Image (cartoon, rainbow, N blue to C red; front, side, top):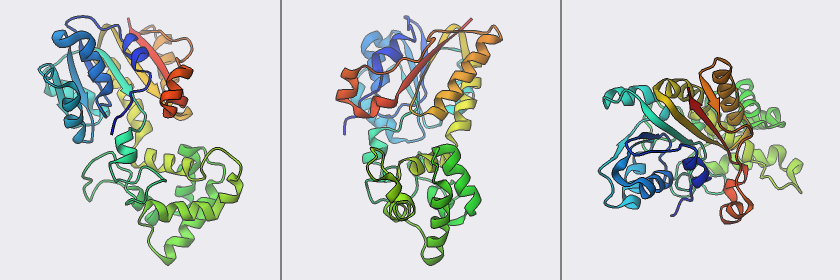
Length: 297
């Protein structure tokens, strides 16, 4: 399984990495962005890779081969960037890169229910081995009340048929527990499938996005990493953030504008950088990506 890093050159160019820099790859995933940085800079930089999925370590090490001396993996989410750096004895960093897209590994290999095209347990957690106390999509659809389910599907998925979907979910779970992705896909299709006929988007797309965001607290974690990460940046250090839907992009844009208005930062990208047609042709999943860059002053 090969994961193609999105906006690879643009996101790394935007960091303006120099010899001696310390960079955090906050979404290690398949290691594509880290590999590119090491390919360019060798051992002259130090990279700290974060990921909740422990398998990201081996995927990255397999990719970068023997060039691992200045690569450190930490099995934590990017919202804990301040704790990670403190534990490593690092006071500040020169760059932070975040690719907020779900990786090919998570969609096609992980077996945790991220894709509505595969019949898998309905987990949707980024952790490889979720514990009993960890929230899952299965818990949300089987135990949350109808109004709360509708609210997250609308709020995090921008799904206009959220009420119909939530109503059908609650009806069906009375008959049988919703356990797999295909269980949920069938429910969504019964609720709103006819409204999606002739459209390019699958009826389950927005609901699955919403459940994944809710399960992993993705939006609140993004807000946290921007605040904490900015505090960890050296003056002249840069943030490089790739988003994939409007909710994420809105959070990044507003946070960057706020930092600029406070006189703390420069926004490098007046408008977000988007993939060129050549990249979209090779990697259709990159179509919705947007890159924003910020420099601390």
